Image 1: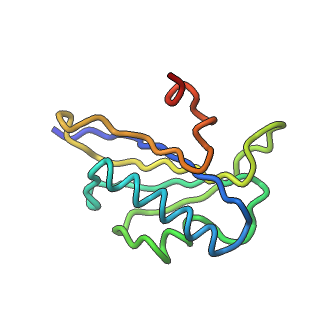
Image 2: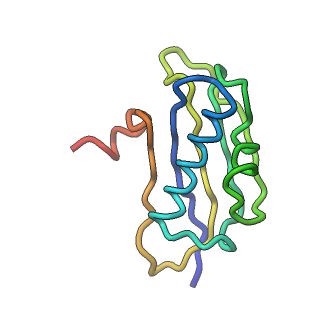
Length: 123
């Protein structure tokens, strides 16, 4: 039986350019899909958030231009501006259906964003 799951990930840009956004979003999404063996038709929606210092390109646009993984609705919103937050960061949450007996979903945090989820990455 299929159940609804949320898969998380994040990446950090070094510079705020369209090409950097395309490269980082592509790497993040491709890695999430590959290591989790995501079936494109099982994806319900993809939600991106960005920090307030990113202006060059919407990550949903970068996804549409480069990833071309199905027809799931995309949405992007801004993260609240919090003192000390990680700069130039894109977060993603993919909602998808998956068989309950499939392997556990693995979140992907790239380019230094592992600090956002120390509970997952500290040994």
